[in-house]
Length: 326
Image 1 (spheres, rainbow, N blue to C red):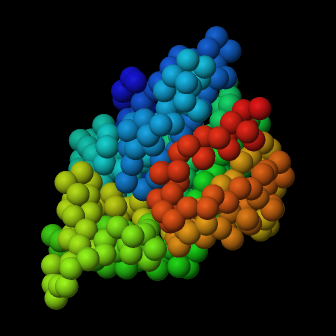
Image 2 (image 1 turned 135 degrees about the horizontal axis):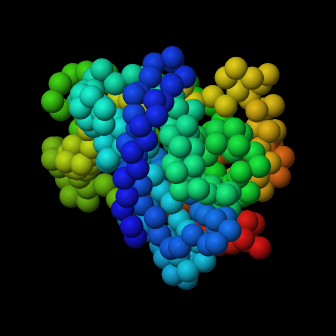
């Protein structure tokens, strides 16, 4: 893996009309770019992940794995608004050295995609062989595939949707309400999010207490643990910014319809849903597959809920190999 920083001194005009004077993007690469500059797998990450896709998507990147570093040049960029090296609420602006904090402008999924396109141009990529992402990452991948239909050859979408649902927005708003409550806000927001990432079955399987208790339950300590774990590695302003960006997701905004926007995708596409996903239920992936022209749908039977897209890597790899790499 190679860690890199790209500084783009050109202003970035946001969908809101606000301008970020200059852009700093942290990104990781694996493998080598071929002479024709088209053996690229570009991964768009989800809400609190980072550019090191091999770390947060285990058993996907490496020699002999589905994203084979001997065959492909794998790129993953930390997204605009995050806190892992790319311009966001906690970063310093490269031009005026001003920390944004809670004054960072509203960004949308389309703004995040603009930053990816800046990086792709900097790397002089001729095309992307496979663009992929799950959850918020899948939202980015759709917008990019719609915006640059001939540039993206294959598309892989998992546990994502064409427009963020009222259910998903409600979860995000509830988490932002927690953020507004003070120092413990981020931990509480993450605990709320865990309820949408997993489900009743998984909690009953892993967090049930066998002995008689009246307090100090496993499920209680698990929620607190997950909350504090995120506090140690993420920033509350970035969490607020990126949850708002997720709410903005609507590939049909400014177009005839969502369905017509999806019809503009020309990449051969694999769409995967997770049977027990409460946050992005399978009907949302079915809608994607029904409206993306060259697409195939698979629903993975998993008890892991939304987190299944990070866990069921063996099944995911087999499906990618079957429907996109053959």
